[in-house]
Length: 152
Image (cartoon, rainbow, N blue to C red):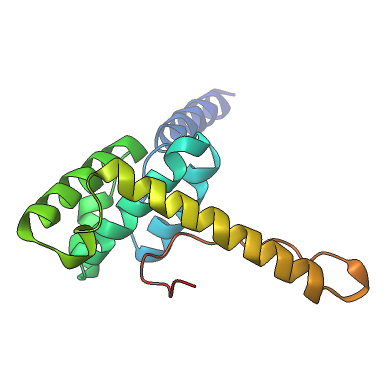
C-alpha cells in the first residue's frame, strides 16, 4: 500500500512537470521543435499565429546550424519567439537586407504575409474542389509558413 502511494505521488509530479512545458518549444531536436510549433499554433489566437510562424522561420534562417538554432528556441514561449523575430527584423533592416526594404515596419510585413496566405488558401481551396474526383474534398494539408517558398 505504501509503495502504491509513493508511485502515485511520483506519477502526479511527473504529470505536473510535463504539463508545465506545454506552452514552450521543445528544442531537443529539429523534429520536436517543428512539432512543438505546430502544436502551439493550434491554441494561439489567429492574430498571432502568422507572426509566430514568421518569427520562428526568420530565426531558423538566421541560425543555419541545428544546435545553435535549437539552443536558441528551446524552452521559449510563442511571445518570446515573436519578440526575437521583431528584434531580428529590426537588426536585418538596419543592416540593409534587400528583402526588408519593401516594408516600412514589422506590422506591414506581417500584414503582407497574411494577405499572401489568404490568397494561397483561396487558390488551394479552388484547386482542391476542381481536382477532387466525384466532388469529394481532399483533407486539408497542415503546413507551416515557409518564407522561401515560391510566390505565385
